[in-house]
Amino acid sequence: MAEDKTSDAGKVAVGAGLGAVAVLLATQRAKAQPGTDNEALLNLLAAIEETSQDILQKNADILAAVLEGLENIGKLLEQLPGGGVEKKSEVILFSRTVPAATGVRIFERPQFSARVTEVVIHWPLGCNGLVDVAVNRGSERVLPRYNYISLNNVTLAYKFGEGQDVDSGIDVWVDIANADAVWAHTITVTITLEER
Image (cartoon, rainbow, N blue to C red; front, side, top):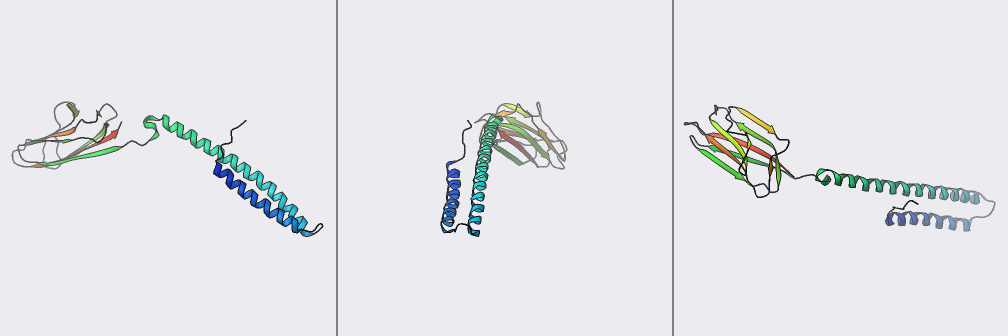
């Protein structure tokens, strides 16, 4: 036997509606005279009441099936990676004007254990391959794997599939070295992190 999953509130509302119709019909029957048009009308209303009860029961059955389906969808979502809950993400912006012939290291600590999903580095016009940039997590290099990247008038975007995890309490940081002996350069780096 199928379990009735209709909510108690739904059952009360359906019952109240049917009860009101039954009271209305009983009141009208008491006033009706046998063999009159009123009696025919009451018979029609009785048939409508019966049909209404059938429709309400079918709607209750449909509602129960929908609720069961939603419950099953919720269970399936819980089985997805991340439990069906949207993961937190964070974009950390590193932007610094680095004076001529100097370098800088900029550190940020993510708010949660995360995975680096994307790094975007912008070298403005005039860097002429003289400004080195490297992105790190803890003591490990993220980009490039070895050495530094030095470009001119370029925005480099690199997406990571996996393997760039940052544990809670570990910094991500950018190392910028300006080898230009004359000009300062502003370098912008964004690191996108996703909760793991």
